[in-house]
Length: 408
Image 1 (tube, rainbow, N blue to C red):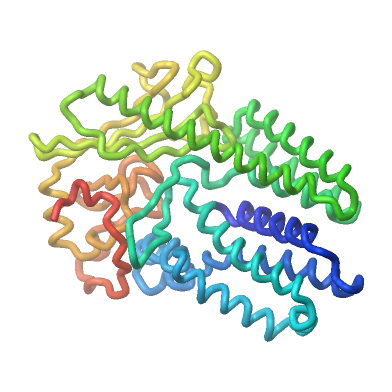
Image 2: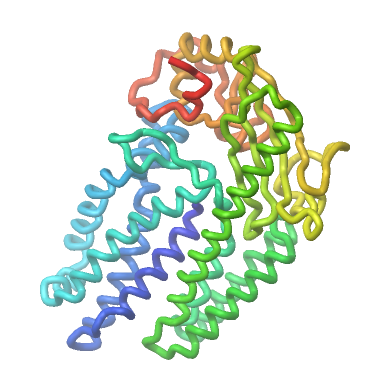
């Protein structure tokens, strides 16, 4: 997820924790505890993304692909992160240290903020098609949620609005204006459907009213935000499952001889009806694999593919597009060539530890999840640039996402 989503979710958890605990002995301690829990949960909710400092260990693009969402995005390595953040706060924040020494309630809240913030980060990153491997080193497979867009305005509004309602009046007005302006900007740029804007307005209104009526120490708006977020995620999960089935059925109708290995799904922002996808198919008899890009609608009579926000794809709808599904491209490649390149090119072998939809040409390779065939996106591996470069060190041993195609 984007760091704005991580931040507003973490701050909302910190505020909800603070308001759920019994009050401290005096107002000064109460103020310190609130700042401590807000900061701790915000920091913990963003801390795993400090793995970006590890990207220079490998040449681009491998450093980002293999070290971002890497070791810091695992449950095991969340433990040293929690200890590091705890140590920094105790060392650099004397008022917080004194509070934690004096108050068992504050210690419980602080421990909860640390744990929830780190787990929240991993959980939110799981939701999209980029993936994480949270159980490494015991299980180094990538896990993909395929259910929430990586920049999700619904989270910004759900958590940001009740948080803004807890701020002083002038700051509240400023924050609410920013929260209203960001989705509207994306709508004018063609990323958000106006139906999504309407849903965001309803969510904002519900959480704002509930938090306002809850009073200075109330938490109803914040609690409602988490309830609505869980309902949104559940709805997206069901929609993702249905979208995967719809793609599989369409592919079987196109070519019943191929086996659908995977369908990488990405919903449109705040829109459970429109989805983009990349399918990975194989045909063992012909020693081939195929990649297809497309979009689909789960409610074609209400929102056909032609009405899905146009800025979420780069191509014009093909002539054979239907209201329910449109295929933009088909790429067929040789499995033997893919395996030989894996065995003979150590940089490509490292790249394959990230690539879920490997689009491979004679000069370069890209992951089709992030752009059209071998487009210049952040996953592009230029073979010529690495032709005389030594094999990389510090390659994390993540399981190949396409081990099903690569064989032994």
